[in-house]
Image (cartoon, rainbow, N blue to C red; front, side, top):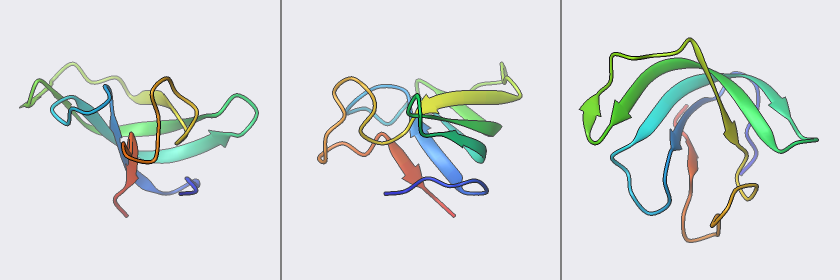
Amino acid sequence: MKIKKGDIVKSLDFPHTDDCYCIGRVVSVNEIDGTFRAETIERVWLGEADRKLSDYFIAPLPGHSFMDDLMFPRVQVIV
């Protein structure tokens, strides 16, 4: 999967659990260090909406983080 500027993504915080994540619009992709930066739309922590939002978050591109594999899509493109 290729992440690109403008994508709306769901970025999971931990492998193999989906109750902690951020949703955001990708504003930049850094192929050199294997990360992307996204403007935060929503954050969920332990299954609950989190009001402690930062304006942006940085997350690893698929395959660039500890324990990433084809069986666990840490980042999902929503739109």
